[in-house]
Length: 360
Image 1 (spheres, rainbow, N blue to C red):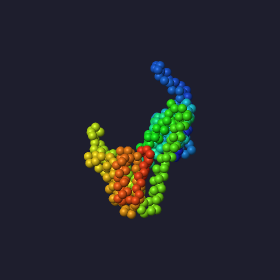
Image 2: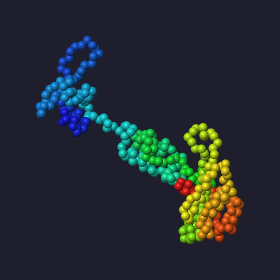
Image 3: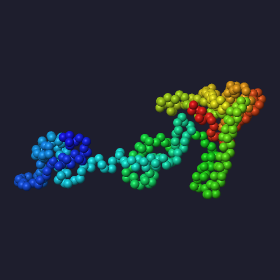
Image 4: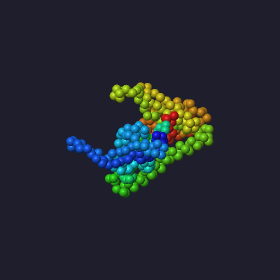
């Protein structure tokens, strides 16, 4: 029996067993009163091999000698009678879970063809697809771009492949945005404006972006100056997003008023140190008085050698762009520094060193 099953493929096993079975037509039939009885058209003779000689055996003995069950034996005799080709089980391509490798490569290439946006507000890199996209739309586009796999790759398989192999999200990264940029971008994409109006919006955006880059370039210049001179310092400050307290996984808490925790961050560009000041809404607000008080606490901790201080912040009017902060700057200039510069972008939403600091 080892010569039959040891290392042989299924088709070769069946071919060998079929060579030990001989078919013959029914020569004589007995008469029967049962008209519905189905008459057999063939009879089969079974043989076993003894060295190189075939020995005729009974069907039961053949089943025992070659470990063939009745169902398997019936299938072999049917193949002999009908002249069917070798066994094709497991070789068809219409199953949903097994696809040719070329289809998986096509799915992978198609998903990677979509543009991505990288978020800077997380400990790890998060990539975002366009907000108007979803997996269903992506699958429909795949069916159009790869028509040869239209009836092969189903939506469920495409969605499963996307879920298990890509950590992409849909939507826009959580970043501060400029209202002017958003307004001009909406005009550029608008279908109700003519080409002349869109060209004007494109030109305005280019000018606006160039002006915004001056803020970033100045930060880089001051950072270089801080490294070169001991008497020059620079800080960046901003409020973190409010944190609700308490934060517990109880459904009823979603309907209750929570206590807000405020986090004020000051990042020293010269020493690359970060200072956090936390307090809840029951202690103070987030107005210009609190900003000036916390800044003054930070300034008192700075190196006495620093005589020239550059301060960067966003353009939030209620906190940083007001007369209170200007008066605080005047006091700092009169009591501690020979030069005090307060810089902020023209619009709120410009990125600084603070967002990445919140993650540390």
